[in-house]
Image (tube, rainbow, N blue to C red; front, top):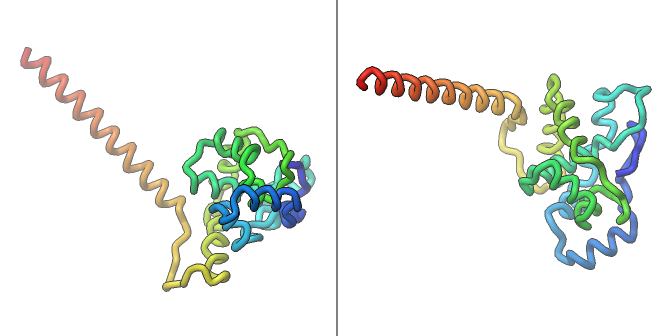
Length: 183
């Protein structure tokens, strides 16, 4: 992905050769192409303006990184696999509005982006457009209140897993002590 300044309209126009190649190789489209065609502008760099210093060095488009994160989750890919997909998959290049020869980025950028998402209420702000845009596009119907806060759910799962791990460790230790006492 090419370096862009914050607030730019990166990825707005899909390069014509990328469109031709992606459509020729995937005439019915793919999930990534569907996201671009129906939810274009799901994220914009402006959505992330307060995540980065105004006078910092130019970097990757946070809107594109958010889209990569969505595609990565949808396809259950590791960071390295997702970075490779940005480099190698025509449909991902189409979704992100990249030139065919765009070199992509180092896979570690995705974990750094997730670290930024984990700060404060950013996860909620990131998920809100992902819920609102499909409804605005008429792709899903709203039914009452939609909770978009996954941070609390993930924290509860982590606490539960840690609690179960501690309980299981104690159980094993007590069994071992009981066996040694019998012997």
